Length: 481
Image 1 (cartoon, rainbow, N blue to C red):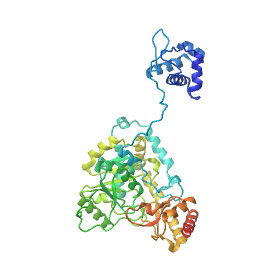
Image 2: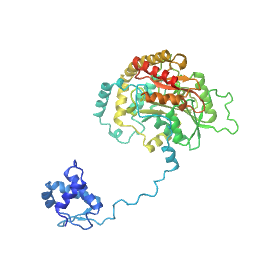
Image 3: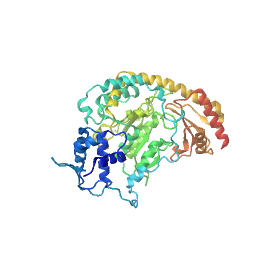
Image 4: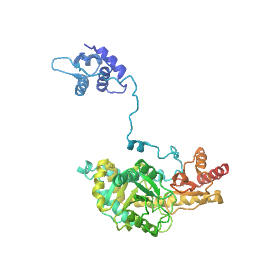
């Protein structure tokens, strides 16, 4: 029989110091069995004897023994001491695996570094595309979150309405109608964690590896990386769409066309109405789906906004995606996808199959946040603040760089683009600025076929002092090239 002192030694050797007594006993005996310290048919002390010797309550010993019995580590019989079960050798093999587990072709594509050349790991005031977290309305959000957390939503707290809470889909549909001129049924709205997950869902539904997808040039790095991970061939959407929209001989039609009309990423320009109509005609000629990313539609700096391509679509060939990452914060993990009625059923099934749902309490709080008017008020405040900071940064860059760079104020969004002559090595300039503590993106890394040079700079947290310091650093960097 195994003596209680031997059990105590096992607990001292194998059990975590902060574990409860029942858990410590259970872990120690299990580890003793797997390490072959305890052998098959070894008898353990009775619960009463073990409790006395180990200074534990008998209930704790019973709990540990019952857990071990449920795992099949020991067997117990009335009137007999527990015994260790006969188990195979559970120790890990001593020889290393001859080769790592092989990835599938899809796994190799997904795990490849499609963002090679992008330096990440530091978040400073000029990181492009990021909001100012200090503007997040924490008190208002806490009120909404606390209020909805007390409610019992029945089946909605289980797996009903996996597509998204009806209240949030209705609130988003109303918000988009008022702010963006988009008229949709809540049934067409899907709630997802982010725009990347929406793009991935549509890619899985509409394309196969080897298919072609078109993007604006220069383009959004995240979309380019995702399409590459899906095994798609990315081509530049022509700047001058041909008048003859028929595909030429040997030309491969695109399955999807990804655009950012509200604020083109990264240039910050708004797509003109004529261009939007041309894109729709071009997509229809190729029988392609337009993926319209309205990522910065809440922040417009010049004139009235142009209706989204989605609202102009007559052929049911546009899907609209959006996110709260810019208007609130990325940690919200809340975005949406709106699809034509014919795609609602397949998207609903794929959405469920891929498990792309969002926390129910966050959804409910966001519905409350929108319907209460707090979201609209927050957007008004942040838009004024961001516009002031955009002007601050562009003024500083224009004053500090002069003719060395083309600086223009964006039509919308949270980033400014600097353009340099083609001979400027923007990657090297970016690296020099990185070494001085500034984070931004080199424009050339976002190009597909073009050869543009420049820097993409965020301004959500820009101040006059930091903007002047950045302008000086860029000027010095250009001089050092």
